Length: 155
Picture 1 (cartoon, rainbow, N blue to C red):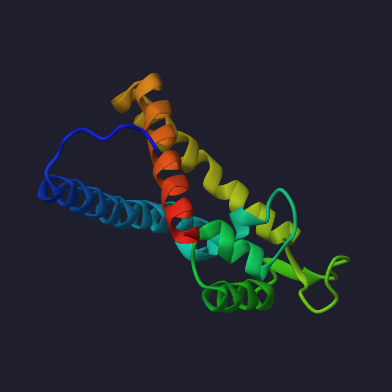
Picture 2: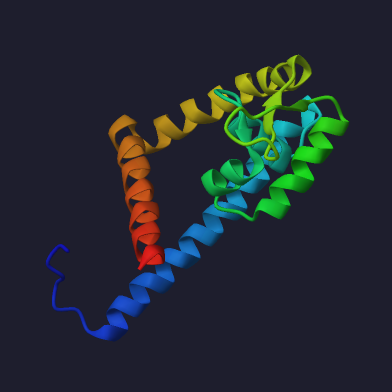
């Protein structure tokens, strides 16, 4: 564990509170932007999030939930909707007979492709606002925070 400065307990609690409030605010901002980006493609932010999780490889619902940090039930509901709308499909899982894998259909991939120009534009504007190094540092800090919370959750 890194050396902690001699901060009073209240100061550490304040840092935690400010971090949580900042992340909650960011979550709301990202959800609003994601809804705006996804809407023209006929998706919601949640649908985009689940489809995005399986673009590289099919995953079981539980694996998607773990990657996204949300409940399996929430992902199951969205996955079933995506399958019903023809944007994703369930396929057999060679590793587990009952836990099928979710993968995007061609229609699902096409919907995601319609989001890409707006997504790229937002990434460019954020890089311009933060600077390339600032943007990369933001990612590193958020990934470090998530990893630290994972470690604490395992204890």
